[in-house]
Length: 242
Ligand SMILES: Nc1ncnc2c1ncn2[C@@H]1O[C@H](COP(=O)(O)OP(=O)(O)OP(=O)(O)O)[C@@H](O)[C@H]1O
Ligand SMILES: [Mg+2]
Image (cartoon, rainbow, N blue to C red; front, side, top):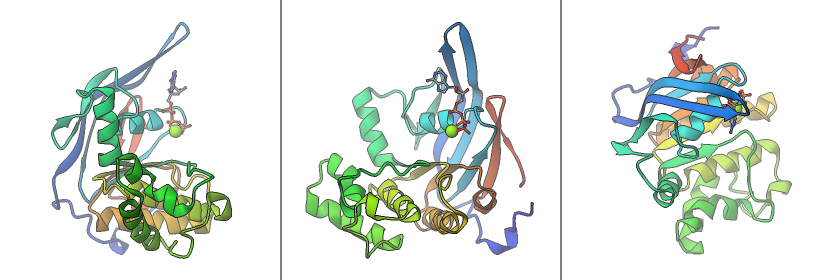
């Protein structure tokens, strides 16, 4: 497949610096009598304003890697630096506070809270960080407008389409103005048209907000939009051209 390099803006390789750096990352799972070396000595550098896509076979460790990069899981070996901060050299409380502030996650399923409106859901990370409702809503509203949901602020997830739910999840991921966006199959549950909209918005956000993005995807359209597609294979990342 052609990467349509001419159709996309400059990847801005020199804009900003290194945000996230994983080195020698390993993750071993012990399951019964079996020892699974899922990641083994993986290195990865993500700079601001740039996006990486990660493809790879089911079970190759893509979600495991994203969980480590975002501090949702701890590695067996190696380390992750965030702007020089050793992420796992923090206790659980510090790690949770770091995650809330530094990293935005988008998952395959939106994980919006059913009893809350779009505005309340997107404001939730800000509320959890200690902000009062009014300033939290002031952060959430423009993001919802930016993802095209200005007329859905008071809709609950059950009153929104799949694409709208996922756009709200993207807005929620960005409400704390993180420098890192991690997405795990963000359009895996959407039809082609909604996928296109969400894919486009993710890439616009990476550039507008100068994010360092790592996107796990089976979606060839999204993989072709990123600055660097990589494959997770035998516990390490290899560059691929799609
Ligand atoms: N907590 C755990 N305990 C034991 N094994 C685990 C654990 N978490 C993940 N694994 C195993 O690690 C491997 C990698 O899982 P992971 O979810 O990262 O794969 P993936 O590449 O995201 O796959 P998919 O494309 O299907 O989402 C799998 O074989 C899985 O069974
Ligand atoms: Mg996965």
